[in-house]
Image (cartoon, rainbow, N blue to C red; front, side, top):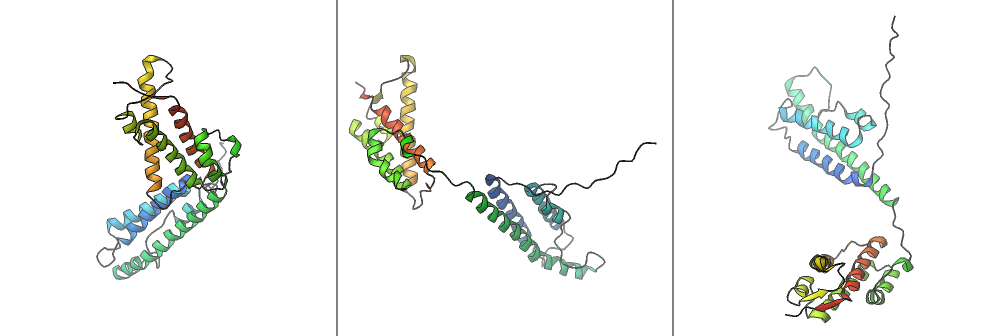
Length: 257
Protein backbone atom coordinates (compact mmCIF):
# COMPACT_ATOMS: atom_id res chain seq x y z
CA UNK A 1 0.00 0.00 0.00
CA UNK A 2 1.44 3.36 -1.03
CA UNK A 3 2.36 5.70 1.80
CA UNK A 4 0.18 8.77 1.94
CA UNK A 5 2.12 12.06 1.59
CA UNK A 6 1.70 14.32 4.57
CA UNK A 7 0.45 17.81 3.71
CA UNK A 8 2.71 20.63 4.78
CA UNK A 9 1.42 24.20 4.65
CA UNK A 10 3.63 26.67 2.77
CA UNK A 11 6.27 28.40 4.85
CA UNK A 12 5.31 32.00 5.67
CA UNK A 13 8.32 34.16 4.88
CA UNK A 14 8.69 37.94 4.76
CA UNK A 15 10.07 39.36 1.53
CA UNK A 16 13.56 40.86 1.54
CA UNK A 17 13.15 44.07 -0.41
CA UNK A 18 15.71 45.83 -2.57
CA UNK A 19 15.74 49.62 -2.49
CA UNK A 20 14.77 49.92 -6.17
CA UNK A 21 11.62 47.83 -5.57
CA UNK A 22 10.09 50.20 -3.01
CA UNK A 23 8.92 53.17 -5.11
CA UNK A 24 7.17 51.06 -7.80
CA UNK A 25 5.42 49.12 -5.03
CA UNK A 26 4.21 52.32 -3.36
CA UNK A 27 2.99 53.63 -6.70
CA UNK A 28 1.04 50.43 -7.31
CA UNK A 29 -0.66 50.59 -3.90
CA UNK A 30 -1.57 54.25 -4.50
CA UNK A 31 -3.30 53.17 -7.71
CA UNK A 32 -5.33 50.68 -5.68
CA UNK A 33 -6.34 53.48 -3.30
CA UNK A 34 -7.50 55.58 -6.24
CA UNK A 35 -9.60 52.64 -7.48
CA UNK A 36 -11.23 52.21 -4.07
CA UNK A 37 -11.96 55.93 -3.72
CA UNK A 38 -13.74 55.81 -7.08
CA UNK A 39 -16.24 53.28 -5.67
CA UNK A 40 -18.92 55.72 -4.55
CA UNK A 41 -21.49 53.65 -2.58
CA UNK A 42 -24.19 56.19 -3.42
CA UNK A 43 -24.00 55.11 -7.06
CA UNK A 44 -22.25 51.72 -7.05
CA UNK A 45 -23.79 48.58 -5.57
CA UNK A 46 -21.83 46.23 -3.30
CA UNK A 47 -22.20 43.45 -5.88
CA UNK A 48 -21.15 45.55 -8.86
CA UNK A 49 -18.42 44.07 -11.07
CA UNK A 50 -16.20 47.09 -10.45
CA UNK A 51 -16.10 46.22 -6.74
CA UNK A 52 -15.01 42.67 -7.45
CA UNK A 53 -12.33 43.98 -9.85
CA UNK A 54 -10.99 46.40 -7.23
CA UNK A 55 -10.85 43.61 -4.61
CA UNK A 56 -9.04 41.32 -7.03
CA UNK A 57 -6.54 44.06 -7.90
CA UNK A 58 -5.83 44.65 -4.21
CA UNK A 59 -5.18 40.97 -3.53
CA UNK A 60 -3.03 40.56 -6.64
CA UNK A 61 -1.00 43.70 -5.93
CA UNK A 62 -0.23 42.56 -2.40
CA UNK A 63 0.82 39.15 -3.75
CA UNK A 64 3.07 40.73 -6.39
CA UNK A 65 4.65 43.21 -4.00
CA UNK A 66 5.15 41.09 -0.89
CA UNK A 67 5.25 37.57 -2.34
CA UNK A 68 3.01 34.51 -2.49
CA UNK A 69 4.17 33.22 0.91
CA UNK A 70 4.45 36.56 2.69
CA UNK A 71 2.57 37.31 5.92
CA UNK A 72 0.97 40.29 4.16
CA UNK A 73 -0.55 38.14 1.42
CA UNK A 74 -1.53 35.52 3.99
CA UNK A 75 -3.49 38.24 5.81
CA UNK A 76 -5.20 39.69 2.73
CA UNK A 77 -5.44 36.90 0.15
CA UNK A 78 -9.24 36.78 0.60
CA UNK A 79 -9.68 40.50 1.12
CA UNK A 80 -13.03 42.14 0.42
CA UNK A 81 -14.14 45.75 0.67
CA UNK A 82 -16.48 45.05 3.53
CA UNK A 83 -16.83 45.84 7.23
CA UNK A 84 -19.48 43.76 8.93
CA UNK A 85 -20.75 40.17 9.32
CA UNK A 86 -19.35 37.86 6.63
CA UNK A 87 -22.70 36.71 5.22
CA UNK A 88 -26.43 36.34 5.72
CA UNK A 89 -27.49 39.98 5.49
CA UNK A 90 -30.01 41.77 3.35
CA UNK A 91 -29.19 43.96 0.40
CA UNK A 92 -29.53 47.23 2.30
CA UNK A 93 -27.27 46.06 5.11
CA UNK A 94 -24.78 44.66 2.59
CA UNK A 95 -24.59 48.08 0.94
CA UNK A 96 -23.95 49.67 4.33
CA UNK A 97 -21.15 47.21 5.15
CA UNK A 98 -19.63 47.83 1.71
CA UNK A 99 -19.72 51.60 2.31
CA UNK A 100 -18.03 51.18 5.70
CA UNK A 101 -15.41 48.95 4.08
CA UNK A 102 -14.20 51.68 1.72
CA UNK A 103 -12.42 53.91 4.31
CA UNK A 104 -11.24 50.77 6.12
CA UNK A 105 -9.66 49.49 2.89
CA UNK A 106 -7.97 52.82 2.21
CA UNK A 107 -6.60 52.81 5.75
CA UNK A 108 -5.23 49.28 5.25
CA UNK A 109 -3.50 50.21 1.99
CA UNK A 110 -2.07 53.39 3.50
CA UNK A 111 -0.67 51.28 6.32
CA UNK A 112 1.17 49.08 3.80
CA UNK A 113 2.52 52.20 2.11
CA UNK A 114 3.83 53.57 5.41
CA UNK A 115 5.56 50.26 6.07
CA UNK A 116 7.22 50.42 2.65
CA UNK A 117 8.29 54.02 3.26
CA UNK A 118 9.94 52.99 6.52
CA UNK A 119 11.66 50.12 4.73
CA UNK A 120 12.92 52.58 2.09
CA UNK A 121 14.44 54.78 4.80
CA UNK A 122 16.03 51.74 6.39
CA UNK A 123 17.54 50.54 3.11
CA UNK A 124 18.70 54.04 2.17
CA UNK A 125 20.45 54.39 5.49
CA UNK A 126 22.24 51.08 5.00
CA UNK A 127 23.82 52.22 1.74
CA UNK A 128 25.53 55.46 2.80
CA UNK A 129 28.02 56.59 0.21
CA UNK A 130 31.68 56.35 1.13
CA UNK A 131 33.61 59.42 0.11
CA UNK A 132 36.45 58.54 -2.24
CA UNK A 133 39.97 59.53 -1.34
CA UNK A 134 40.71 62.82 -3.06
CA UNK A 135 44.04 61.48 -4.25
CA UNK A 136 42.17 58.82 -6.23
CA UNK A 137 40.63 61.53 -8.44
CA UNK A 138 42.94 62.06 -11.37
CA UNK A 139 41.80 65.40 -12.78
CA UNK A 140 42.91 67.75 -15.51
CA UNK A 141 44.90 70.61 -13.99
CA UNK A 142 42.23 73.23 -14.81
CA UNK A 143 39.47 71.14 -13.22
CA UNK A 144 41.71 70.25 -10.29
CA UNK A 145 42.62 73.84 -9.47
CA UNK A 146 39.04 75.11 -9.64
CA UNK A 147 37.10 72.18 -8.21
CA UNK A 148 39.10 69.95 -5.88
CA UNK A 149 38.86 72.23 -2.86
CA UNK A 150 35.08 72.48 -3.24
CA UNK A 151 34.87 68.70 -3.52
CA UNK A 152 37.06 68.21 -0.44
CA UNK A 153 34.79 70.47 1.60
CA UNK A 154 31.73 68.49 0.54
CA UNK A 155 30.32 71.17 -1.77
CA UNK A 156 29.56 68.62 -4.47
CA UNK A 157 26.99 70.63 -6.44
CA UNK A 158 29.29 73.66 -6.63
CA UNK A 159 32.29 71.52 -7.59
CA UNK A 160 30.42 69.80 -10.42
CA UNK A 161 28.89 73.01 -11.79
CA UNK A 162 32.31 74.67 -11.68
CA UNK A 163 33.83 71.79 -13.66
CA UNK A 164 31.18 72.23 -16.36
CA UNK A 165 31.99 75.95 -16.54
CA UNK A 166 35.69 75.12 -16.93
CA UNK A 167 34.86 73.12 -20.06
CA UNK A 168 32.64 75.87 -21.46
CA UNK A 169 35.31 78.50 -20.80
CA UNK A 170 37.85 76.40 -22.69
CA UNK A 171 35.53 76.00 -25.67
CA UNK A 172 34.98 79.76 -25.74
CA UNK A 173 38.74 80.40 -25.59
CA UNK A 174 39.31 78.08 -28.52
CA UNK A 175 36.44 79.03 -30.81
CA UNK A 176 34.48 81.96 -29.42
CA UNK A 177 31.57 79.61 -28.74
CA UNK A 178 30.88 77.96 -25.38
CA UNK A 179 28.58 75.10 -26.41
CA UNK A 180 29.85 71.92 -27.98
CA UNK A 181 27.44 72.05 -30.91
CA UNK A 182 28.51 75.55 -31.92
CA UNK A 183 32.21 75.03 -31.19
CA UNK A 184 32.37 72.00 -33.49
CA UNK A 185 30.01 73.62 -36.01
CA UNK A 186 30.47 77.35 -36.43
CA UNK A 187 33.77 77.32 -34.55
CA UNK A 188 35.25 74.58 -36.79
CA UNK A 189 36.84 72.86 -33.77
CA UNK A 190 38.80 69.71 -34.51
CA UNK A 191 40.42 67.35 -32.00
CA UNK A 192 43.61 65.53 -32.89
CA UNK A 193 44.20 62.07 -31.51
CA UNK A 194 42.02 59.61 -33.44
CA UNK A 195 43.53 56.12 -33.58
CA UNK A 196 43.48 56.17 -37.40
CA UNK A 197 42.54 58.66 -40.16
CA UNK A 198 39.49 56.64 -41.22
CA UNK A 199 37.92 57.01 -37.75
CA UNK A 200 38.81 60.68 -37.24
CA UNK A 201 35.23 61.77 -37.92
CA UNK A 202 33.82 59.28 -35.40
CA UNK A 203 36.39 60.38 -32.82
CA UNK A 204 35.50 64.04 -33.22
CA UNK A 205 31.81 63.29 -33.14
CA UNK A 206 32.40 61.51 -29.84
CA UNK A 207 34.21 64.53 -28.35
CA UNK A 208 31.51 66.84 -29.70
CA UNK A 209 28.74 64.84 -28.06
CA UNK A 210 30.74 64.65 -24.82
CA UNK A 211 30.91 68.45 -24.64
CA UNK A 212 27.24 68.68 -25.61
CA UNK A 213 26.35 66.25 -22.81
CA UNK A 214 28.27 68.38 -20.33
CA UNK A 215 26.35 71.43 -21.54
CA UNK A 216 23.02 69.61 -21.05
CA UNK A 217 24.06 68.45 -17.57
CA UNK A 218 25.01 72.03 -16.72
CA UNK A 219 21.60 73.31 -17.83
CA UNK A 220 19.83 70.61 -15.86
CA UNK A 221 21.78 71.33 -12.66
CA UNK A 222 21.69 75.12 -12.87
CA UNK A 223 17.95 75.49 -13.54
CA UNK A 224 16.78 73.99 -10.27
CA UNK A 225 17.31 74.83 -6.61
CA UNK A 226 18.04 71.17 -5.87
CA UNK A 227 20.74 69.72 -8.12
CA UNK A 228 20.60 66.41 -6.23
CA UNK A 229 24.30 65.62 -5.98
CA UNK A 230 24.81 64.40 -2.43
CA UNK A 231 26.82 61.28 -3.26
CA UNK A 232 30.60 62.00 -3.34
CA UNK A 233 31.19 59.11 -5.74
CA UNK A 234 28.61 60.51 -8.13
CA UNK A 235 30.18 63.97 -7.88
CA UNK A 236 33.62 62.50 -8.55
CA UNK A 237 32.32 60.84 -11.72
CA UNK A 238 31.01 64.18 -13.00
CA UNK A 239 34.39 65.79 -12.27
CA UNK A 240 36.16 63.06 -14.21
CA UNK A 241 33.75 63.55 -17.11
CA UNK A 242 34.73 67.22 -17.28
CA UNK A 243 38.37 66.27 -16.84
CA UNK A 244 38.19 63.89 -19.82
CA UNK A 245 36.72 66.65 -21.96
CA UNK A 246 39.51 69.03 -20.95
CA UNK A 247 42.21 66.45 -21.70
CA UNK A 248 40.75 65.95 -25.17
CA UNK A 249 40.49 69.71 -25.75
CA UNK A 250 44.21 70.02 -25.05
CA UNK A 251 44.67 68.52 -28.53
CA UNK A 252 42.32 70.97 -30.23
CA UNK A 253 42.88 72.86 -33.47
CA UNK A 254 40.65 74.86 -35.78
CA UNK A 255 39.88 73.40 -39.19
CA UNK A 256 40.94 75.43 -42.16
CA UNK A 257 38.36 76.37 -44.77
